[in-house]
Length: 279
DNA sequence: TACTCTGTTGAATA
DNA sequence: TTATTCAACAGAGT
Image (cartoon, rainbow, N blue to C red; front, side, top):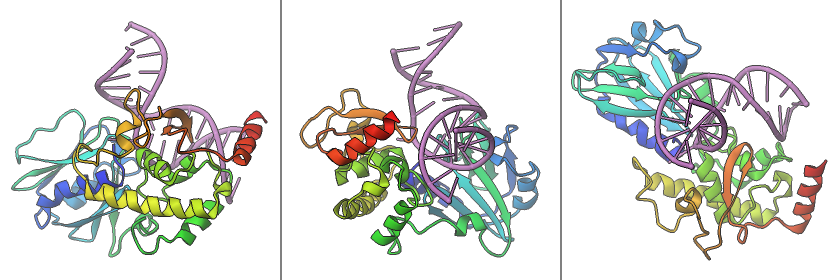
């Protein structure tokens, strides 16, 4: 589920608990989301601490508590944050419950690809400060994007867009939406991107991120109707521009949809692709 | 029932 | 160093 906008949506769910003390902690017996940490760590340090604030960067979240306590949350594929009544009883896939006087803050994750990290110290943890500037930030320049792509010359653009080191917060559907808008074939190798294509890619990345954040919600029902997104998974999906049936393939290990009419490989790039595929 | 698919990512291999 | 594959997991769909 979670890409940039959904991460932001989930983060805000817990905002009602900001400024309030954590009275008690409950953890699931499955400790996978806490991998790397001793199970007793959270109850020991978080009990009695006050929830101060939270922030999202890409798909990561960082929560700050009093006593120099930090909690990192990654939603994985099926994770979500929600708020329940104070007496809420933990359900099968609830992995972390923060009990507060007015409510219970709950992290639920059936597939357990999500992750909770603990950090204690005066400053945020290293893994957080190393996250590159967001795609909507002024620091995400076309030059930055191009120098990142230059480090992955043979990677298909679709696969490159999924690399969080270069495109924090971009996930499968945002990558497809962006490539469709930029009219770039998902299989185009990074080194074959022309300068006009790079400009289009950069602009559409920023556009898609900005719009997605504006439309955040529990579902994507409110997203503009003409978005590629809506056609992506539906059977018989068509290009919103001229109704061409979409092509689908696994690229970079992920199911990818594109319009064969809008997103064309140049004959040169195509030859390169087929010859390297034959090899 | 069995098999396939999934909004992720990071460890292991090539 | 970079690219690719696959496992971690649960549930829904065919």
